[in-house]
Amino acid sequence: MLHIALLGFGVVGSGTAEVILQNQKQVAAYCGDEVNVKYILDLRDFPEHPLGDRVVHDIQVILDDPEVVLVAEMMGGAHPAYEFTSAALKAGKHVVTSNKEVVATFGAQLLDLAREHHVSYLFEASVGGGIPIIRPMQTDLASNEILSVSGILNGTTNFILTKMKNEGAAFADMLKLAQQKGYAEANPTADVEGLDAARKIVILAALAFGKLLDPNKISTTGITGITEEHTALADKLGGAIKLIAHTEKIDGRVLALVSPFLVLPTNPICHVDDVYNGILVGTNMLGRALFYGAGAGKLPTASAVVADILDILSGRSTDRRLPHWQVAGADDVADVASLSCRRVYVFEGCPRCEAKAKTALASEDSVWLCDGKFAVISAKMTATDADAAIQTTGLCPILSLPVLD
Ligand code: HSE
Image: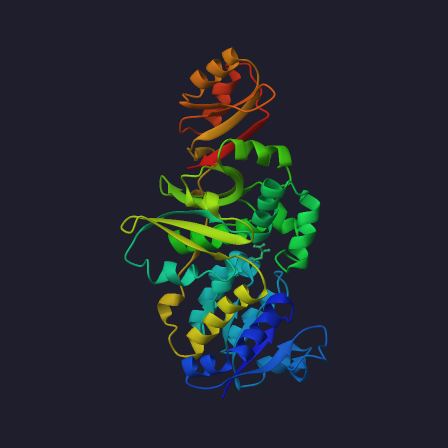
C-alpha cells in the first residue's frame, strides 16, 4: 500500500480524491500497488464524505508519519502552502502541487530543496488545468530549443470573453457562473486582472529559459477594460479578443507579458473558446505545437495532479523532471516595450483619416466597421513606435490592442 496525504480539500483536492477512488484499479495497476489517501488536511471537517475519517487539522501529523511518502498540495495561496511544502520536502516526502502561486514565487528554491532531500517536486496541474504541458515541455520537446510560448492560460477569462462575444452576455453574470462552475480563483480578481495567467506564463518561461521571473513585476493587463462593444468589433474583424500570456527571448533577455490581444483566425488560438486553454509552443525543430484542453475545473485539474502522483509512485519520475531554475535578475528581463508585433487600432473618422492612419502605421489592412468607425492593423512594430506614428496623425484611437496572427 502506498500512503499519501492531500493538503486542501476544496475543488481540486476533493477532485483528486475522486479521481483516485473512481480509477482505483487503473491507479493500482500503474503504480504496482494500491494508493491510499491516509490523511486530508483542511480547516473544515467532511463527515459525509467517504474519506471524512481521514481529515486532520495539524500538518505535523502528516510530517511525522513515515508511512506517508507523498503529499499533494492543493491549498491555493502562497501561505501556509509554501511553508507546508518546504516542511514536507525536508521530511523526505515527495510533493506534487496545483498551486501556481507557490511554484511561480518559490519554485526555484523548492526545486533546490527537493534535490537536496532526494525527492520530487512536480507541478503539472499548476498550468493549463488538465492539459499536459509541463511534462511534454520537459520530455517530448527536449530535443528542441524553445523559442516562445503564447496562449490562453486562464479558463475563467476565456469563458467570460467567449460568452460576451457569442451571447452578448454581461461580464459580471459570466464571472459569477465561472465561480459556480469552480473555474475561478478564490479571489477572482487574480483571474480577471491577469495575475493568474501571469503566474502561469512565469512558470512556462522558467521551463523554457531557466529564469524565474517575478510574476508581480511582469507587464499584466486583465480584461476588466474590455466591453461587449470591443468583443463585437473584434468579431467584425473576423477575430476574437483573448487574454494572451506570452514569453520569448529578446536579445538574450526574457520577455513575459499578459494582455488582451486581437487574435486573428489564422492563429489556432482564435478558435479556443469557453473554459478551454490553448498553448502554442514555438520550437526550433518541431515548429509550433498546440496544447489544447480543459484549462480549469475540478476533475480536469485533478487528473493532472494524479498524473504527477502516479509518475512518482510508479518510480517513473526522474531527476530531469526537477529543472534548475535561477531567480531572474534585472539584467535577465526584457522590457515589454521591446515586443514587436502587429497592432490593431479602431478610430472614428472619415476616409481621409483612414488613409492617414494607414500610411502612419505602414498598414495594408483596414476595415470599415459601423457608425463611422474603422480599424487599421499596423505593420509589425513596438508600442512606442506605433504610438509615435499615431501622434503624427492627430487621431485618437478608441481601441488599441496587440495582434496575434
Ligand atoms: N482560475 C483558474 C482559471 C483555474 O480560470 O484558469 C485554473 O488554474
